Length: 100
Length: 179
Image (cartoon, each protein chain N blue to C red):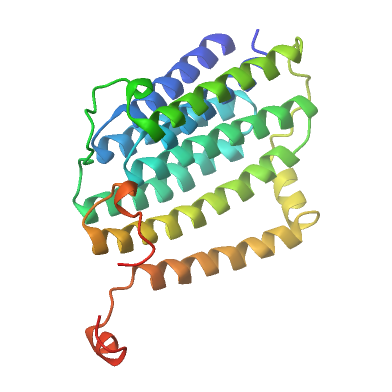
């Protein structure tokens, strides 16, 4: 029998993988992808709790999270393109200066 | 049958997510993340949320990931350049990276502890809200204001992305005194 706890544990595992990706990887694109993994883990939690409480609000919040994720991806990737033009690199360590 | 499907989709989501952060080539990372989103979409179906399952595929896998793929191919810089050996375990890498991996492990411990305290939640109750009609009605009545704010957010993000990614015009640069 699959219970709410199963979904919460799966979501926790996915969120931890996303966090580890943000900290461990040195590539701006992969870091943005890890953030997407974390957002999806949270979405899964919202839907699971909405199902357990018999309410539609969880699914509506997921809708808003997806909107914010789309906006974040668009702006984040624009910043990545702009940074790449300056340094020809995607390594966040090479963007340590405030001015160059 | 539900149980088998849950473990199948859960395993695909976890393995694909792990491979996303293990790949060195971002194109493979993006494609694996799409696989992970497909598995999550299956989980939403199991949770009686077909609307979320469909927009997960259409919006996330179809639009956001294509944007990522587009940027990866535009930049044409597949491999990450690092000073340290990529094959070394994250916990054995220099300074800040070791700290980051340590923080991720602490988060795993915390989540484990928090979930262990909850006790058994039992099976899901009957009467799931799965009809798009109910969700749409709620979205345009109770959540009408957040919904409208969302449209402004998308507009701002669109304008911001255009401005940020715009190539500097050489003529403007001369006017600013040459950089």
